Length: 532
View (cartoon, rainbow, N blue to C red):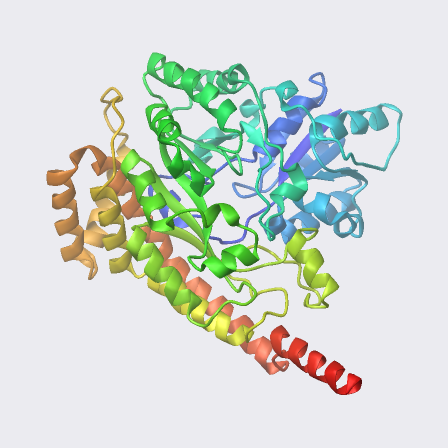
């Protein structure tokens, strides 16, 4: 079999980073780890070609070469996924589809002609697909309620990637999360019992990347890297040795729950193993909203203290924030901005709450009749909520726009980043000095020109840079990299404003919905009147 693996386009999002990537001559932040893992699980006597449409479209020769086209996508890639299924079918190809989005809403891909649906986790369902292909079958749906043992997952086929196009590589140590956040689809897709690979498996993946010549960042894409703390500590103890033996060729970023701050040993192991940044799902500083959405792990101690403990340990925090929880009081956007300033979190993903298919939130809102028609919860910073909120959507959207723009005001961003790096701890190790690449030097000069000379940020830029050099010089490279992120947000904040205002105008023209809390109150009043 000749298999063409196709990864659909991401629209512009928080994570697209086009302006920053252009500075260092890269096209995409991260590769399609799912597809290169699929290629490793399928029979290795098959032939594979991979096209990441975020880099380039498939050529006519690649389309003609393929016996079967396999696509994988997240919900944010929905539109291009559906387009590519239709494109492949028009060319007479067998089409197989999998990944988080098709797993959640399989009828969407069936409706546009997908032949094979390889759903849930591929370690179990891909062999079912292979068996069907070998029998000559031309369609089928393969599902499982079982969660695979990921210690059997092979090393991904990183060799299929156009490595020079990516800024970071992706690896995965665990799947699943032990918590029960109502809005999260990770526990629906992968379960609440985190399953991990062995340390030897993960190190074998790093060995392969090293052999391929990779020497840049690696994102540990686990949805909660510390979900199984015992196993992650076993990994980090071996990773620390591997990194020292290989002279620290990588820097790692990952995602973790805020309870990381309560484990000094774990934070120290991460920093000593080469971790530089961690994404934290904070969501909101409002404790009532955290309780409502069952994010209890964020209510057990001071969130500000937790974030600053993580910074002092040597990890740059990135944070996820959400506005629009049930029962949320007015001014939520301002409270999120104040929290980010107080905690000194440089960059935040901030969006309006979405009800993702099959989550506990989605089921509850469906039962209450609150889901908006033809809205699928496409997680993006440029998307209105897909359900009837408990306060006017117009108020939430306007708070959101102003808060997003305040967070990414270029001066406020520099100030927050400066305060973060002043308190940031350092690892005990130091990577060998090397001559910086010309493209990196050029990128640095462009950032200096724009932020230190051309724009109103000039005085802040130089004050903060010299202060960091004097007071915490060991973090200066990481600090300048974080300053460069301002280039993306400067443009993206306007994209968010324009698109949300456009959607809001359309929504208001159709006639604004009555907030759910008022609908409920009127229904209760009517019921009481009937009883009376």
